[in-house]
Length: 414
Image (cartoon, rainbow, N blue to C red; front, top):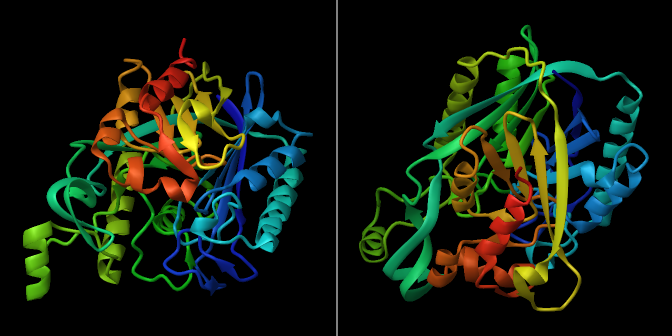
């Protein structure tokens, strides 16, 4: 049994903002549905742990540092863990990455004020007792986006023997994870860890939480209107929705597909609705087949490591930057959070570490470093290992980055 408190905050913007990694650099104000921050406070064996999930591309350095400072009265800053859903359709809040969009400081202040007011109001209230249950399930609704092609297209140019953004079956098995929190009578909160880039929306003229918002709404309709859903973006650096072209409707498209292979496009509204419905059905079926049972031995703890980026990469401008690693141990399973977009191959590595204890990775934590590819991907090239570097101020990745990342992870293990 654990003691916890959870809740939700509407962080839909009240002012105009640019989208982080949005379709254009113009200003947006309207929101489709709501953008949310969902929080979970857990009593750990060495102090309370605060987890906050934001419907944002990245949380960013300033927002992270300010929240940790403001809440230092209640929490050890190393036990405050902030992470983004990585939706590509939310206001930009990361000042360190201007190539993804400019930041409206008023919106950052709005978030801070709402988060601080909401959480401080509940800090004096008693926590709820509850049990925790991990539910893992296989998903078939995500596509790998790294495709090696002899002849391909990249940025409207023809390339030869290169890795392009195209559909592939690099992972025969992908896994979603649910952490259900409640008791034998009702569900009280849920943590959902799912590895998929929230991109390719059919409608892109409003802010949008993407599939996270759709699933959140469906889940609440089925299991309780006020249930907080804390979303963690799994290791999805090379994974995305399956919006690739399967059938061509014109001679030009037929010739393009025949020569260069399939490519990704935006969802059509009907296809997007079906895809999100199918995601929810997978989640609901997995959840419905599990029971929350009493566990007297459940104890929660967390650890934190911060390592200089110079161990992993060369920067365009030599400034002090870090990659953060978090380890949240629930006895029967554990979570590893990294301040990066981590490719799914590292989840397979986590799967191999402890035979009787699942370890689940999540990314887009706090001040995101960039992508973390494998050594093989570095040799191959492609978006995650080469083409994306300039957006994060990275000149090059170190050849030993895979070994260095794994070396940090194993430090958490007994």
